[in-house]
Image (tube, rainbow, N blue to C red; front, side, top):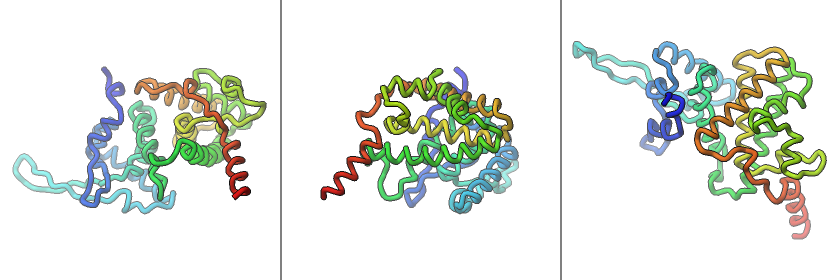
Amino acid sequence: MTNVELYNETIFDSIKHIDENGNEYWLARELMPLLEYSKWENFHKVIKSAMITCQNSGNQVDDCFPEVRKPIISGKGRKSFVIDYHLSRYACYIIAQNGDSRKKVIALAQTYFAIQTRKQELNELEYSKLTEDEKRFYQRDLTKKGNYSLNQTAKSAGVKNFDKFHNTGYKGLYNGETADDIARRKALRYREDILDNMGSDELIANLFRISQTDQELKNNNIKGENKANITHYKVGKDIREFIKSHGGMMPEDLPTPEKSLKELEKEKIVKIRNE
């Protein structure tokens, strides 16, 4: 069994720590071997790049990457200290985003920490306490924001045919299905939005496809429409393989909600008017 086959969320959870205030964190030197970095110097460069990403996104680096000094004893009994970091879940996520994308384990780490980071974006309500429809609205809003960012990145990469570009991503994730194929399978009306007719799990899978493709195009400086399309397809397929390897349900097998989000929005408006 390869290292990749051994990876699942239990591995990352097994090295999670909880501080005296109940906050979770990961030690950088414990995360390093899981991401298949053998030298601290190389991994430290990735951490530094992630810190820049953190700062540019408007977050406090010191909050996400607090530095600590760990004592070590040499063979001669001499005590010295090495640098380590207490990494937040978000810090782990952007470290994975800045890691060597050629490593399969990096993609798995990106997906794992992305799932948890997305869920933690809720401030007042815990994600698990939301109803399924509330989760759908929340995830749909994130996909709208993600698609806007992806379109800007794809445009900079040279993409002009955006229908083809987005369909390559769907094909990778849905085993060859285009957006039209998905719509027909869901028995939707002409030009009805397929994302509005997905459950929360299916939306999450697509959100990962969107966000990971955005990062791949940026981090690898992808240029050219054909290369961008290939990247989108590969990301979609990688996420599909990740779902499969963990025994998850394939996106095309997930149930279509009885009501679209637009229908639910209309019902809300009617209810408000009648109150």
